Length: 311
Image (cartoon, rainbow, N blue to C red):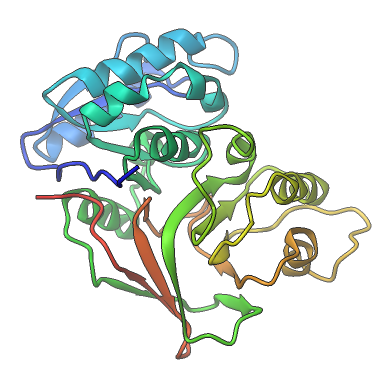
């Protein structure tokens, strides 16, 4: 399936807010809507965004219907999950990927909804934005670096932009550069996809993985699951997001880097301590598009090779 890119987001466009995972409050939703309105966008809120069913924002069917309503709406150009949390994996087999491909628009997500970035790429061939959700815009202080990077990516262009990598650690490579299309996201939800038709093909890809709230042993198990399911077969590189401060009791490794290398095996390059995890100032990634890690200098450099959006 050929890669499909959404149209760039423009001033005055409609942004659709959906629930994919855990609930938000009415006050949080109001803050997101006010922020987007203040930037000159019109806001459309899917039915059921304020639903609450325990730790979920309502039933999977209602959450999926909200996502599909925003993709089907011809005025919406950006579909934005209200927050992360838990539960986005419930939606993977409820979305209509033919409708999504016929109505390409920016889908932006971070944390739990990153499973949908990958399912949308595999099922509809549509590139998407990984690094932000509505959560970032209802905080008391919005991280300015992250905010600017997000709008630059969804409004375009970004091809040729570079991000220097102070503190990034490179393992198992003697090459000056590594490139490939980006897949992956948050470890826990993404680990549900291998073996299904909603997992993007790993061959030649740069795989992103980050995790918060997991223990050392849980990370080891999830990485092993991905390895056994073939998620690391023939990949260009594995990139591990910071912070990787997984608590351990009697660890088997000297560091979390060693845990990753031991568990994923293979010979592909591994780059760790890259800031795209649950921390301020995250790097934004275009899922499905090609990027390059230039390792020829100190520090390494991330370079965007393709735009996420078309004019």
